[in-house]
Image 1 (tube, protein in one colour):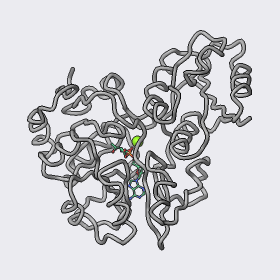
Image 2 (image 1 turned 45 degrees about the vertical axis):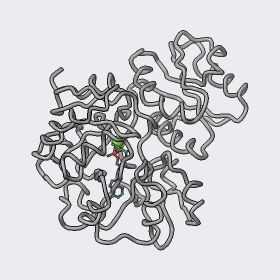
Image 3 (image 1 turned 120 degrees about the vertical axis):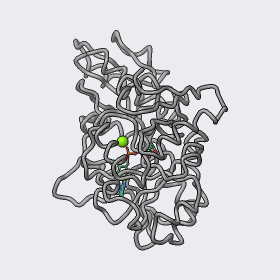
Image 4 (image 1 turned 90 degrees about the vertical axis):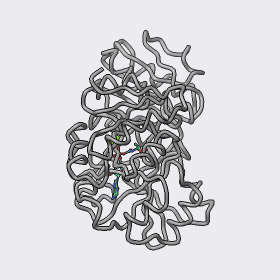
Length: 343
Ligand code: TXA
Ligand code: MG
């Protein structure tokens, strides 16, 4: 390994995080686990360090980063004001997989926000992530751990494959818990807009008595003539290099039949639910699990596995676009470049 490896897999010896935390504060890049996906972290107040994240990932300059904090005192230093809705959301879901967009203070480098006057902030619940922020004493800017356009890193093997040598430290915290990136929201005129769906769902937010609007780009294709609230939507993401097709039906038999037709006579791999594994006539099958939690935890690493099989096509079973299913379908539609059949 070229990056320095810190093994936190089965360890709660958090002292091992002190060295990477100290280096991060001084401008180095530290790859670390969160409860959603792994992130590539840098001192959010160090413009040069933040620039290096964009270089390591090959990321577009106008795609802004999320800033990770460990406590509310840090928030105060970074944002102009916290409204009533944001307060409610923070109380209900922080620490956890919810990112909130706020009006930023000038202390935040323009490089982080892609020149916007807002900044996306998240307080992760992962203990390793929290300790890293606490020990470094600075907010940490961190995008998902992947080369831009590729699936986000959720298991350490994928991450080492792709990013070893591009960062100074890699902290191994084992497989992540959720497997999809955080829900990103922005409150405008009393309504919460979901810019990127995740584990915290529309229904979870509505339970607090708040109105929620899902931005239409969440399930649609990017149209360059439309204004987007979240610049990330513009970019290709999660995509294997192999051609993919995503299929969904409420009827399991029809789903299997349609996928079998799509792959007939082709060298193919199917990514499907455990209960359907036996139903496909194909050499390569990958098990996505049987419920939404398992599917979200497995999907990114399975997309990478499927790609490595070098087949003509990857066929993927879709899920209902509700609850956590909305987040899964948002990622899969983009992975498949909207090559989608609903039957
Ligand atoms: O779970 C996560 O959020 C992970 C972990 C590492 O915390 N991070 C992550 O970061 O997914 P990234 O950079 O891959 O995605 C950030 C998303 C992008 O879609 C970006 O457009 C959006 O957040 N975003 C960031 N700042 C924004 C802002 N000021 N306004 C609107 N959207 C913003
Ligand atoms: Mg990302």
